[in-house]
Length: 214
Ligand code: URA
Image (tube, rainbow, N blue to C red):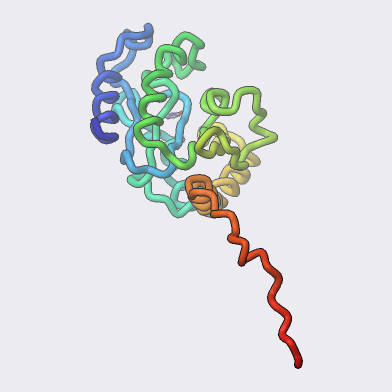
């Protein structure tokens, strides 16, 4: 299966998933969306009210703010992948439970493997904890960290930022720096995949010959 087919297959499985009790209360599962060729994956927490209605990620108030943040970063929604660590809405938007995170984890792993993004941007603490366990968002937000063969940037969740003016300014500033970080990630990954430069030949080591004056 090619990456597009893998994403479509995961979405089909997520739509009818019964791995955890959240399937009893969901209206629509939210597998996530975006092209298999995306260089950046934005990974949030879990669907909320509107996402559960529509089966699409980040379409409520937090989603509108995320759209604005993407625009500030010079990114089009259609060129990035957007999804969540949990694919079904927890009742009343409560925090995901460990067993729900565990049940859903394999879907996200397959999505990440299919897309192989240069950067994963985590939105919120549950997503951050998956990629940067033990990290504190106040200490590392907006910074790019290498994790294996890609980079992870933890951002404040847009919903949290909507409710706290100081966080809003911070998350806007962090997103504004994304293009620069993407360039850095591209250059660094290119360097890592290039074969090491060959050892210099003996000639290249030699001192330039002295010209005889006589
Ligand atoms: N919040 C999230 O974390 N994900 C969504 O899809 C919507 C709101």
